[in-house]
Image 1: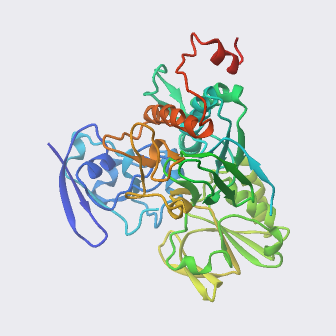
Image 2: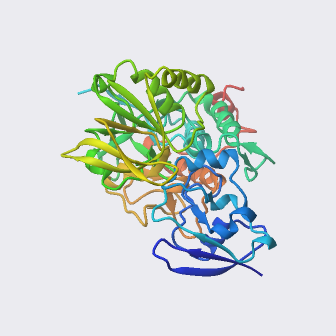
Image 3: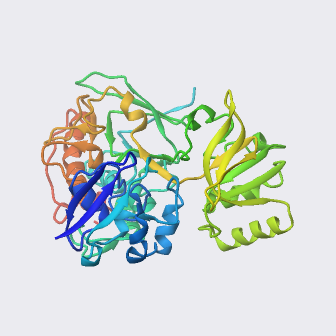
Length: 106
Length: 345
């Protein structure tokens, strides 16, 4: 199984099992991980599933697409390692992925 | 007071379910007015995912949000609905009795409608401008922080900071540039979603030193008693710096809020309206609710569920609009009377 760890803004860490093929956003909702709202349900049409990818993972996870960059304009405190978690598909290569949720979504 | 328009049914929300409700009501000779806060019909389908494919509309293996809305608009055309777009319902007053309901609905554009039934098809609530992510911004809203331009004159001679990278931000930067003392456009990256000709026009003004462009994100506000004096920005180096200004115009997209619906005396459960599953009526007789905004055991937030709910609500609405008429259930394939209403017989 593939594991994804979510660290919230206060530093609390939650590691959950993720299904390959699902997204980092869906995995959070399915496991009741707080800090991710996903108002639009994963259509890349809001910016309420914003996460910061841990530095050691940014290269493997990759950069946001143009559409995702456009949506990130609506997020708060966007950083170079910002991604929308609905656009990160879980693969075997992402086993052990660590993301941090921001203090505030959108 | 503005003039009161009387109709049979008022539909709040012109998303797919609100639009289809026009059809189901229309087949039963119930005329409808629709109100939506967005300047266009279609709700989330046209605002959030016009180009995205939907795969679970019966009979359409695949259809985009916009195609579905366009088709629904064609389908309800025979019933001649009246649209009040770009208006938010502010008040809903109960004038009648539970047996003979009558409602008065007032919008922020002073449209006043009266009808025997109201159908709430408001989805996730009303689309409202998203607040910029700066703490304490509420205290300045409407005084020196705005999310839309109502009167350009307000900005005359003032130093205006405009935040955003889409068409609204760019259009207002260009339009306010001759009026304001100085316009500064703030965007988190040196790439813009706005139309290329607006971006080029903005860059030309910046090159001529007639406008400022800051690549940064909003981090805070300074000021007192509703009047800002400076906006704190953070550039790529994450170092905060202040930019003096008199007004902030922020364009951070839209978010869905329940809004005034919460004040209408309806039972609510976690920001959703509970209904029964036979008539989709709320706790107020004559007020129906359908689509994503309702909850009942087994509820699914699917467009197709909303269509079903609208059909059943219309049956009960007929009872209020035509209390003395017996309702005969008919099919559009075989009923000449229904086909006449549709303009095909």
